[in-house]
Length: 260
Image (cartoon, rainbow, N blue to C red; front, side, top):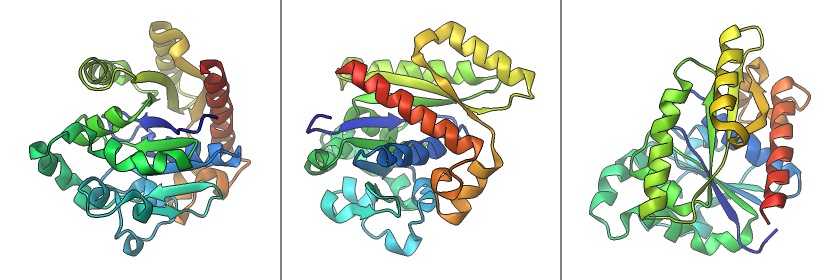
């Protein structure tokens, strides 16, 4: 690894596609592979924080106060229960930043500027974006080197993806020329459902090598884990969902080796 973290924004403007689940479990899997990982919960719903067992009472130093300059990154970082995985938690106040940042200089770069002191301490910084294409997501894209897109195996999957790709291209053209696509991971795949198979085939046909070989299945253990404040890898390492995220992390790391 380089001495500077790779920053990965996990983004999709649609909710319920497995974005937070992918953020939490990819971060956990990478830390299990010996990488130092920081997960930035940048969704006002704070689900990634809950999914790693961060009590709402312990979120006074959070991603909202970080980007508004009220706290520094070293104060905002909290250790999680997963070794080598730290988190910056989110609170609902973060939703106000969409409006508050509009009048700020370098409004698209508030997150990047806030993260700079922490970058040398990690191999990967993973940003769990909100389910929108507003100013918070633009901040994440301006901070990131790469974008990873979870894509649910459903009928309108490709339609929503095209809008996100246009946003990524706009950010790359005007704000962050180093931004590139890390890949697309198919989520909530149901092998009993012909639609899942059809959508997966269509996505691979349109996007080819951009789509990871690993597919994340629908799995009840994945759904249960957040209610116990755990990633699915900590909750049940041997279930199908955990094994899929282990495979995704391996594919991700192989991809990273080829990039250097």
